[in-house]
Length: 141
Image 1 (tube, rainbow, N blue to C red):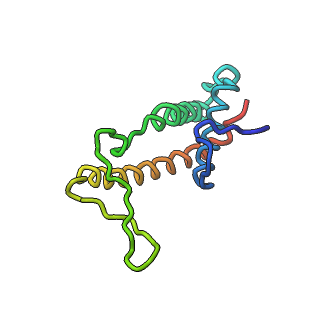
Image 2 (tube, rainbow, N blue to C red; image 1 turned 90 degrees about the vertical axis):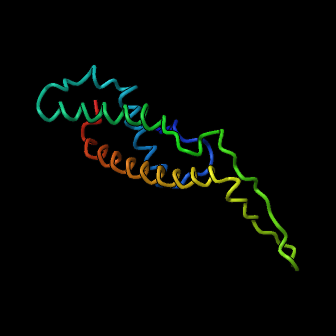
Image 3 (cartoon, rainbow, N blue to C red; image 1 turned 180 degrees about the vertical axis):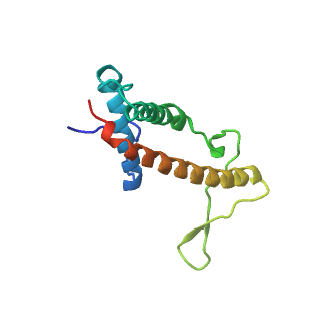
């Protein structure tokens, strides 16, 4: 079996990110390809009912809620400072020029909000990955 992770763009990804996306790709494949709702009686007992609810909730979170995340920096109306480099006197090197903080105040506010959002998203990803691991035993048909 080969796992194709459809939620990662090509290019380099750190292993922690790959692990998250791979785990949820397995859940998506389970729901969409194995159709567990057609093969398993999820109302069979008090163990299966909550497991099926958790599978559906996590699937919905991954495919609809998480995939629609938008951060403050996604706002195209926010002017971004140009990437400029200044010469370092007496050398052949250059350093990143500090943009005008007042002129780009909205960008810097959005940058701070983005950092907070990314931390909240990381925490949410972590909680839901743990939830997925808890129902691992139910991912079979």
